[in-house]
Every structure is written in C-alpha cells, then in structure tokens.
Amino acid sequence: MRFTIYQESRQGGRKNNEDRLAHCYSRDALMMVIADGMGGHFYGEVAAQIAVQTMTAAFQREAQPKLEDPFWFLQKNIGNAHHAILSYCEAHKLKDSPRTTIVVCVIQDNVAYWAHAGDSRLYLIREGNVAARTRDHSQVQLMVDEGLITAEQAETHPERNKVYSCLGGTHMPEVECSRKTPLQAGDIIALCTDGIWGMLPNDILARSLQHPNLLQAVPQCMDRVEQWAGAHGDNLSMIVVRWEDTYSELTHSSVSTQTMGPNEFTTQLDEFGRNPHYKSDLSDDEIEQAIEEIRAAIDKYSFKK
Amino acid sequence: MGQQANTALPGGFQIEDYTIDRQLSLGGFSIVYLARDKEGKDVALKEYLPNSLSLRGDGQTRPVIPAEHLGAFRYGMKCFFEEGRALAKLSHPNVVRVINFFRANDTVYMVMEYEQGRTLQEFIHKHLGHISERFIRGVFVRLLNGLRVVHSNKLLHLDIKPSNVYLRSDNTPVLLDFGAARQTLLSDTPMLKPMYTPGFASPEHYGERKTLGPWSDVYSVGATMYACLAGQTPQPADERLQKDQIVPAMMRWEGQLSDHLLETIDWCLNLNHLYRPQTAFALQKALAEHGAPPASADKPPIKTSWFGRLFGKSRK
Image (tube, rainbow over all chains, first blue to last red; front, side, top):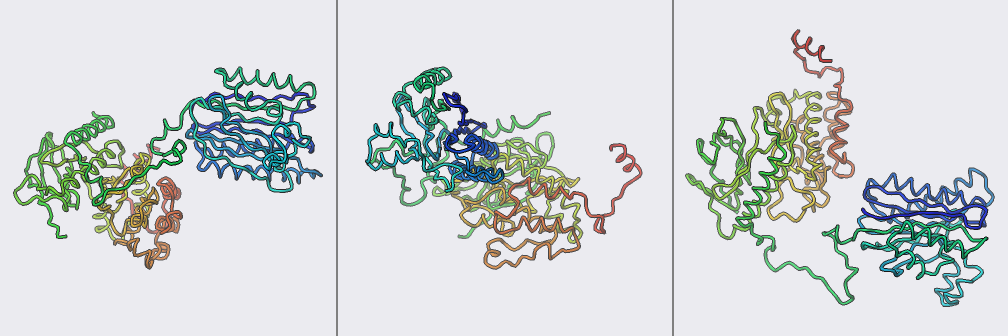
C-alpha cells in the first residue's frame, strides 16, 4: 500500500470541539473514521469519542493484516459503537443519550469500502472531479431527493443540520454502505464534517485538494473555510488520503466489470469435447525449463556440505 | 479399462549417475526404486510412469505412449513437476528431501534421500496392540512440524497415511510421497483422477474439493493415529457420510490411553471440517500440551543404562 494521508480537526468558533477523527493502518489495510458529536445533545464529544475508539479498536483486532469482509466489519462495528454509546449513557444515568454521526472508510487491495450514518461526508475525487460522495441522512437531503426543494435552497435551509440517522439515538442507526470501489493511482478520498462541506461547494473542495502536496493543501483549505465561517463557525475536521496504487496492477486474477460498456460481453466457453487444457502440451523446452527450475530450487534450499 | 502394470527397471540398471538396486514400491502413477549414487550412497528414485497412459513391457527401457495419450502423459508430468517444485522448496527434517531431478528414458525422475528405517504401516503391523501414547504423541508432534512447513508453503499433502509416514531408525518421522500435493492456489480441476486413499482421505476429498484445506490433512493425521491403535484402516469417509460406523476413539480405547489423546483423535475425525482442528498447529498444540504421558501402566519400560542416566542428568 502506498498513500499520503493528512488529518486535522479545528475548534472553529465554538466553545469545544465535538468532532473526533482517526486513521489506522496495518500492512494491508487502511481505515479512516470521522465522528461529529451532536451539539444539541449532552456529551456530544463523548459519543464521538466512543464511536471513533470502537472503530479503531475493532480494526486493530480484525485487520490481521486485512479484514475478511470489510462491509461486514463496517456494519457490525458501527452497530457496536451505537450500543457502546447507549451503555455509557446507562452507566452514567444520562437523561438524554449523546449522539454522533459517523463516516468510516476502509481501503484494502486497492478497493475502497465505506459506510456512514448522519451527515458527515466522504468524497471520492478522481481527476479533479467528485466521482462519488455519501448522501446525507438529513431531512433536507430527502426533500432534495423528492424534488421538494432545490440543491441551492437546501444550502440555506433552516433545518439543514437535522439528521435522521445517528449513533446513540433511540433508533438503531441507518448505516449506509457504499459499493466496492476500485481505486486508481491519484484518487483522493476525503472524509469531513459539516463544518467543512457546509462552507465549501463540492467542486471547489475537489479542486483545492487536487494539489501535489496534500500536507499543504488540506491546512490551506481549512484556513479558508475557517475564515469564511467567521467567529461563530462550526468545528471543522478532515481526513484526506491520496491513493498511489492502481487496482488492476495488483490483482491479475480478479475481474472488474466497472469499465465495461453496457452492451459489452465477455464470454468464456470450453470447446466441445475434451477439456482444452489437455491440448496444452508441455513442449520439450518447457520440460527442460521445469527441470532447471526444480534443480535451482534444490540448490537454493539445500545446505550443501 | 484393463490396466497392465508397468515393468520395473531391473536391478543393476544404470540411469545417469544412479544404479538401481531394487523396486521399493509401485503406484498407479510412479515406481520408486532403491538406487545408489556415484558415491555409493542410497537414494530413493521415483520414476514418473502413469499406468493408464503408458506401458513399458519386459526388457524395455522406454515406455510406449500411445499418441492419443501423449497430451495427458505430459499433463501428468506437470503434476510430477509440481511435486518436485513443492518438495525442493521444503527443507525440513520431517519432510523428505529432494536431491536431484532429471529427464531420461522419455520420462522424468526425482531423486530423494533414503534412510534406514521403516514406514509407520510396517511399524503398526509389527507392534500391533503395543503402541503407546508416548509413541503416538512423540511421532505425531514431530510429523506435524513437517506438515506445518508444508502448509506454510501453501501446499496441502492430501495423502497422509501410515504408508506415507517413514520412521527413521530413531523413530523420527518423515513425511513421504507428495504425489497428491497440490498448490492450493492452483486448484484448477485436475485432469488425472485426484488421488486419495479411502479411509485416510477426508470427506472433502470426495466432494467438490473446494473445501479442501489444512483441516483435510488434519483428518488424515487423525485417521492415521486411529489406525495406529486399531491396526486397520478406519471406515472411509464417504461411507461414514452414508452411515457412520466408526467407533469413537473415546469409546473404543477408554481407560487404555488418556482421555485427552482419545478426544484429540476424535476431534480430528469430525466429518464436518469446521469442527476439526483448523490448522496443523492447533492439533500439534493439543498433542504437545499434555505431552507428559500419564503415570499409568501403559508407559513402556525404559531401559536406561547408568551411562544414559548420567548423560541424561548432565544435559539438564
């Protein structure tokens, strides 16, 4: 795995920072997580902290060195985080349970998997454009989807910060999983809280991260957001990774149909009669070569006196 | 399909640097000879000669391979190469060592180390009813050392049985015959019939073979341990799937050996592969854990000379 990663969280104009974020990687897998504790609830930052800790602990336990089933990992552990928050709430006899949003992304074998609940977002930026992003679990997004309001109206809608899915609430969170997304070298994945996306239109975000030096571009971008947001701006947090490997390079054996046209087919059908493998006659040269190889292995692995 | 056995090369026959002494074994796929190298050292020489595809009559050196079988003959040769490749990479005291590989007489030969000793099968027949817990634990813990190396090279043996376990004169086991071993990653459908030995092959051997894994070798190790005690081949897995008539080791030898060992054998012989030890290491751990034999009567008398006792002490 080769990648460049940067994460930062700022308080903005608020009294405390209720955003929590982490990234964690093993030899073969990377996980990034952001949680935005909810201001309207007590202990929002506690909920965010529990969520992030649950995910990182699970990742360290299960990524040995890869996750067996990334989607199952995400689904299961986001659920666990939800229950961990409820247990905390019970143990401390809190009147109202603390809540948090969450967005988690796992990358392994050059394939990205992500899941979210609430309105913290993930963007996949390819060649300067937003190739994919998460859909917020908010009333406003639903209204946009149903055509009741336009995207522009949503940006200034008074209820734009209300979410219908989050961890720690009375309902089980609605966890939405992405598709398996094969990555290309140069792809950028950005996870951020509403403090960022609320101030920065998608295309500007995409462009400002398309910078050779990520470690410089992200803080600059956050500087700008902080300025615009002013004295009472929200907490703002971001994890950005630029992936440096391409999916197809590594896995020869697997097939990706993502690049196939809608009318394209690939067919493999054995010939009538005997299995065609039978015909793959070993030539004399191949026999000699195999023997050479075996002899070389014998020489290499035996300790001759 | 009538099959004639191939004629073995006669004693005294010279191939490359080796002189054949006698035939050691004859399989459907190959003939193994005891031979001597230039320096007079004993070696085991394995000749690739599938019965169904080639025929060598009396007095002939080269097999006759009908034109329609040439493709399959060469395909089988690929498998023989795989065995060679697999073994060449493994250098372990409990796995047979390959020392040379060459082509002659229109076929190929693999030269392996030969040591004084006997197969576990011969041992079982000789010592039937007197095989101690200590012997089983001692032999199999070491055998599993070898098997672990095999598995860590992404190979499965797939034909573990008493006749494929060789005991050197000091009873250290050596895993033999990797003719069935396949790279687990290259699990393309074998063209030649998959080889296995009924009674020792796991249920997965019979089915689609997709579920073959280290646990399949573990089944065979369990069956081999069972055979050490029973003195005969356990009921084949395919029959067990129809009607399981195997008497659990726990019931059959209760009181004669430790419950722990008997339980471990039954654990390996679970028909459901998920219920068996999943790795050679897991089984090895179980066998080594209670490594000390029970203080009960089945302990064989150990003859120790005063010298042995003294030496034993001084090494501690």
